Image (tube, rainbow, N blue to C red; front, side):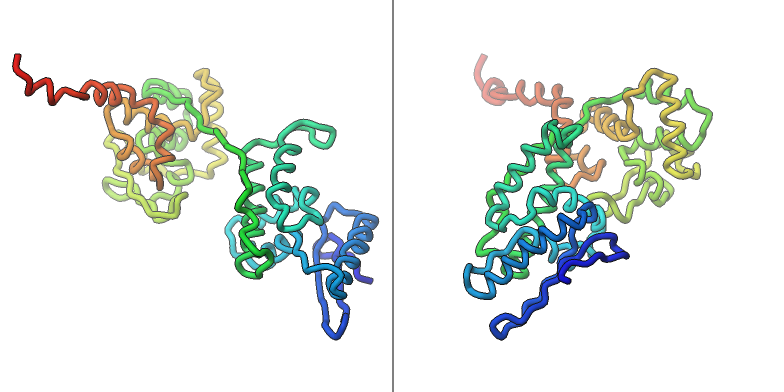
Length: 330
């Protein structure tokens, strides 16, 4: 039978192995784990009919998005750091691209965003814009990979795909006084050290825990943007830099307890990174330098703090035309 159940994967597998007009056609596809036998049999009938039609020249070979995803998962995903997550996300949207042609990718993505982005009888809650964007990107990457490496499309299938716009910048900052109150609210020394280091360096929690300490700097061999970074050590955290930090989960627990005590329930640990940027800008540091301290790869990442540099903008505006005024006679 062309349909059988793979016990290790826990899903049905479609196999087609026929010799038609002197040419052997072999196809294997792993179907979604949530499918039952009836759904698998229905797919078997549809896909077998399509393959027979292609072999007998009844229709031109048409590649499906399913084919592109299967190739991408088999060849590319295993080499990606987030490969398992990508495979899961693509499976979550299988219903949207099942049986659809590569040329229909833009319509598939548009329909999926409209359906998954609202509450209806099939969804308890709408998907976040970031989740939608990531899934669309994974699907377009799969199709582009199949196009470039296997010729499954005459042109770039994702050229007309529009991903949802994501605006997830947080604009919540705390002052030095609030940071100190947060530290005083906890007796957990490692948590206090992590908070102070984050506020005076702008580093992420993961960066603080793995940074190599030198006499006057934090050295990061690998960062989120893939490039190494050296963060100068503020004089007020030299003693904190010597504290050995436990697992992130323990620090997070004490952090949540402390923020509740001081009435900052909305505060995330990552907001300390934003607070460091805010403090630098308030002291007149330019956005370019702030971006360098935070390790931003592009200026677009630092642009979220542009509204804080109002005094610098006012000074820049005030200088317009001043050269001519100084040279003009009284």
